[in-house]
Amino acid sequence: MSDTDTTAPGDRPEPPTADGAKPARRRSLGRIVRGLLVLALMIGFVGPVLTVAAYRFLPPPITILMVQRLFEGQGFSRSWLDLDDISPHLVRSVIAAEDANFCSHHGFDLEAIRKALAHNESSDRVRGGSTISQQTAKNVFLWPDRSYVRKGLEAYFTVLIEVMWGKPRIMEVYLNSIEFGPGVYGAQAAARKNFGVDAKDLSRTQAARLAAVLPSPLRYKADTPGPYVRRRTGRIQAAAGTIRRDNLDACVLG
Image (cartoon, rainbow, N blue to C red):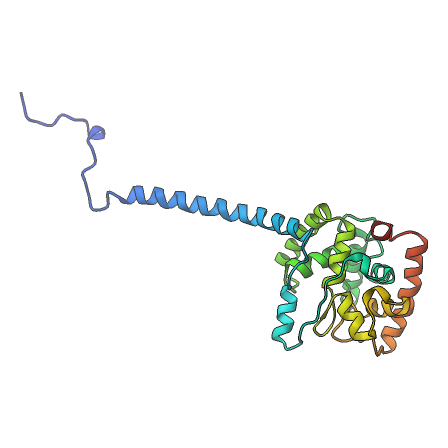
């Protein structure tokens, strides 16, 4: 019999080479990369859900804005209160000042957004259309920025807190986290610093003044209000009266 090799070329085993292990390594690397991507996606989805679920019952800790202000040398003052220990006058005032439709929308006020866009097209002064829910999502979970990435994440967290928290908890977290002045966060710290009273004892005028500084809390002062804050306080008091009369605060105080 001839010793000639008659094995078909396609049936011959590949000769061993120094690179023989490379295909196996590439396949292993591919599995690792896919696994990491799946893990990242799971963390990106499950992480926020678990965090929002935890904050349904636990006070959110220090926020990114608070850390930024600390680095700016503004100090830190904050005392967490249950919603029942905050004056209803302040609840109505912030609804009147920041989000009159708080109890009727599901996180986004499309009409307010439309009006803000129309205003911004014809004015140098930018007007925001964010709801209290959106502001809470931004303040607690995100960083101060106007990028599309931040706005997209804000929308995601807004949906989560609307579904998982409900309106009373959103208002409670908002009133405990919002910036009222340099280094002053939440209703209790603001009430003590500006008026020397507890948040539950705020009068209608005091509550309206605190709400009046929210567009720019580092610029305006509630304890020594200038003309703009005084005018805005009067408008907020009138609007808060409408909020109460028309029961537009029922989702929080009803």
